[in-house]
Image (cartoon, rainbow, N blue to C red; front, side, top):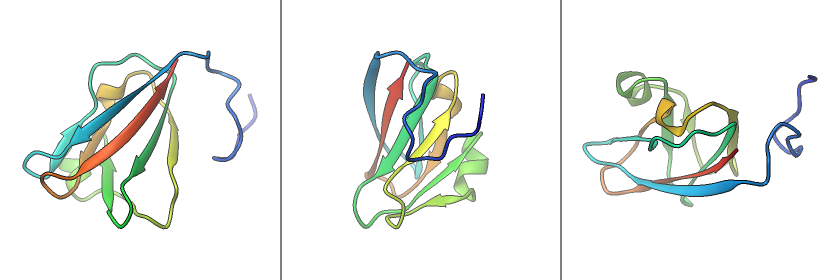
Length: 97
């Protein structure tokens, strides 16, 4: 399979999808246990979300801020994603199977 940029539709997913809205508790959040093939992540306007493979990594991980509309990741389960942010704020996931 060829690399596809973030704006191209993915040909590896079905029409099945759902949404998770995660609220930060103690500056951290983790995806629920949802099998998938792809996740699209976006944050609320004016907010910054950090992403990592563990809670500790997410606390200092790369940031997705409001200069990026969304981030698309190929991943097998939403519970493999950890996020860092401000307690009480939210991060949004759209998962696709």
